[in-house]
Image (cartoon, rainbow, N blue to C red):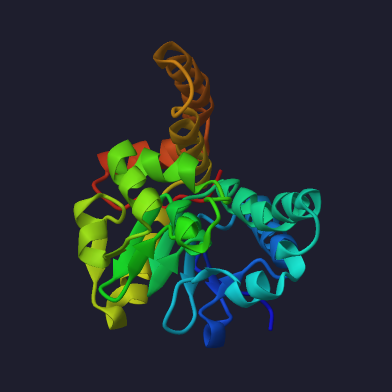
Length: 265
């Protein structure tokens, strides 16, 4: 079964992990290529202004395929260099593709997001959760380490101490704890999750597309540059935005007391 189901409507693309019978495991041959193709298409289409990532069935993603680990097949078989290349060329390709999406990404976490699945959710710029969602980075319980970049991104979201607690204990937290810790920004009932995600995406998609991409880039770059560099980047990006038709539309709409209609001009 194909890993990704893709649907685009009203400037929003929804990517659904589509292996519901096995809780949407990741890492089968071709998964990285599927994500790379989908995310490249999103970046190339200026009509897309927001992306929602969710899972089919009762889970967001249970992470790596435990059966494949047991049988030492696919990414989890071979010599140490071969396994490392499996991560680089397939599993990491999933994560790099999502991280490289240039428009805002909303992770709508419908159920358990464990291991690699949690890392995937953490790549969302915004994360909202069903009350049935659970989060865990349980790698050490399997005798392995977080091999998917989670040690880089999770501490940036919830802080070093809480991230360390999750990594070193393998504990799984519920949606309310995730909300209290800042891992997600809101928790809703399961039947309302996608409605909430789409409403949030619609607000994002109503913004000017060039400015959206620039704002995301500035936030992303701000993690690793000095304040002076961030200001210089902002000045250059802002100069470009002042020359767009969408800027003119935004000013006119405010003065005319009406909602703006941004077209990407």
